[in-house]
Image (cartoon, rainbow, N blue to C red; front, top):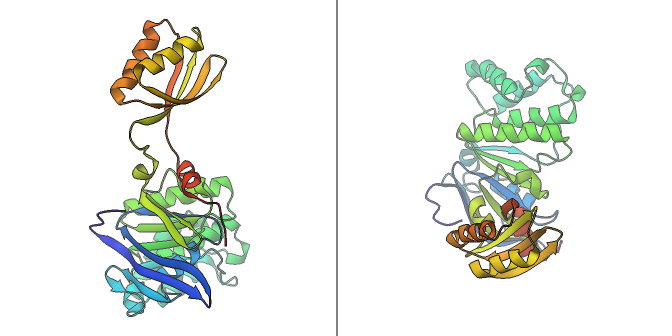
Length: 316
């Protein structure tokens, strides 16, 4: 990502080795405050290692990590005041109620005792567990346990929330609830870094994406920049009730450049080089030629399209 004016987290030439194995190759990345930054890539790409270095659980072999301008491995306690973290695998204290669990961590976060009861009520409501405050954690469903873990991570109002595969094992409804909650937290001023190996989980609510593979950051940019098609190349779907393929092809070629096309009965999926003015001209030509159009749509590039184009599909 370019022109980061107000980064909340910065990686400078960060590298992580385990003996001869390089888990993360030298990496530079700055994430803007207020983003929901999705870190995507296959299992073993280095996402978890990067997040653990960001929250201070792992020290980089070389390089530096800054949280709000504070180097986390030199001033860990000061930097961690700004961090909420939820790992991909975590355990709850199963003999505690949801309230007791949060109360324990509130004191561990050194929150003012007078503020703790109201804040626990607030986060339980935020994650939809207000009716479970006296339930033992061992009796909670997978989705409820995940929401309780998230409640613990945001209890102290961190500026940065680091989530490692938080939707793993959740059913579709629970995943949608998690997505809605993260969007709400963003509106409240929380910056979120979330990792996943499932691309569809992140597209549609992340504001920026980083693609990792084999310990390298292959690409990082805003979602709009990643999914925009370079130049005037477009993928169009055309479908019509009456008219013939030759007429449609001729109209396309008169308007711009036809790069590739997949024709079938009364429809075509084609790649074309057209400006917006030429696109409007194409539509007018088709109508003038008597083609009765029922679909004239441009297919937008998805994050998955970007990943498939960039990836070598290798895993560690």
